[in-house]
Length: 220
Image 1 (cartoon, rainbow, N blue to C red):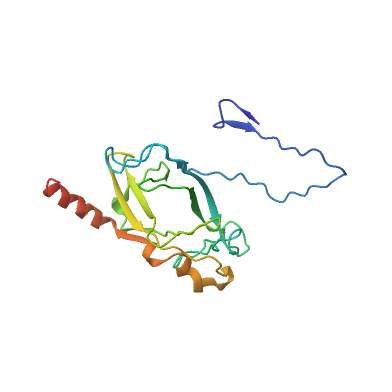
Image 2 (image 1 turned 90 degrees about the horizontal axis):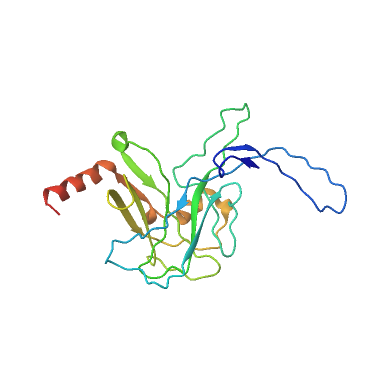
């Protein structure tokens, strides 16, 4: 790979395979480069002086994606990935074949999260939400690696605003845990088990603006 500085300006890409014991034939039908704009948030997520994180915090987390084509079959210790209720998979309009596009979601796996601690990912975007009516987000929680996780034991939160520390809205919901061992082939029958209604964020943006106006009037 040749790049002027880092990975921002990649001009060439070379792939090679070695150490074969006998002749092989490669047949490549499609080559895709998969990237993510989500980044780990490394700064403190709590207001200074409130809910201080212990100095000896060993929690770590991984950021990846799950999708309908690769993760639709569950298992003993994991839930299948299904399309959220009310969401239809997009179709590929660039071909004459009636083909559905892959549908995927962001996945954040956290290990050894201590009490009052938090982990987050972020993405820099530019949106004008004035012309939007509602904000909807589907959330899912499950234990992994055979660990125990109870309902309302963890919370999920979403922040959006003009910066990360001072000017933002935050919505937080306690999480209901999806049981493992579900059959991914059940279709819509398990959609609400994988995406519980209690975990869903569905709010009016005007309502947020009204709460902010009320706060300003009360000089909070």
